[in-house]
Image (cartoon, rainbow, N blue to C red; front, side, top):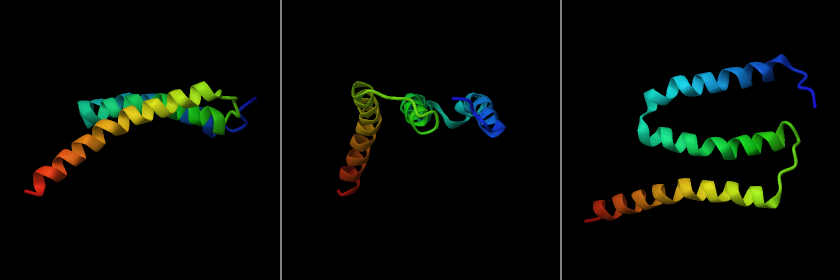
Length: 86
């Protein structure tokens, strides 16, 4: 499939550059979350924009990655809520 718009070319060129510029500014913990979410986003965008076929096993991998990102954040939030309730 040929990308017909130069706008997509600019997006795919500038997004990694801007990502690397912003990483030192957001800090280590948020940077780790952003890095981990990069692969699920790439798979999702390849399906939506390029109409690539993604197998069930690949979608399971995406879900596992997203759960791995969400689970520690839920634990931290629950810990904070229990500390504030006393």
